[in-house]
Amino acid sequence: MFLTRSEYDRGVNTFSPEGRLFQVEYAIEAIKLGSTVIGISTSEGVVLAAERRITSPLMEPTTIEKIVEVDKHIGCAGSGLMADSRTMIDRARAECQNHWFIYNEKMTVESVAQAVSNLAIQFGDSDDDGSAMSRPFGVAILFAGIDEKGPQLFHMDPSGTFILESFETSSPRRSRRRSSSRSSRSRPGSASSPTPPPSTFLQASY
Image (cartoon, helix red, strand yellow):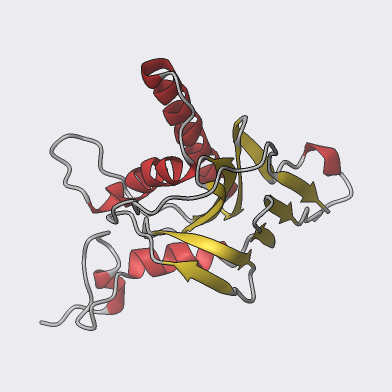
């Protein structure tokens, strides 16, 4: 007896005959329900912009926070399920604090993206240690900041893959990118980078 699509998407690690993970595809579809988030990285800094979607006159626009601070040198913005976004932002903040307490130095933007991606891919782990997630996170996040490598912008999707971006738009309708290869399993490059200017990321909500 062959499994139907509804049976293939019951388990988070169940592949279809075509090699698809429907749970991950559903999480990616959830991103389309979110508002537009834009990240731009240049040689002088990083800019994050996010749309404030007001769906009711009872909503106070100033209470909608789409762009948040992870550390003094890192910010992030997400599109999709905001409850999932808050969970991942809390993990990013905790990782930055632990890194500072242990090593007395700021965590790099790539290391933060790596730490959060490790949380995102836990939906594929076994249940032996009790840390497996019941489903993938339905949110895409842009991590922006400045470290010793200069201005950095990373995009992470529900599959746990993160990519170094020079231009990225997270939108319910379209997405453009020029990227360098990075993933949750990649090794950081060893090429030297110029010292970044003494600036921080810019943010705007509209």
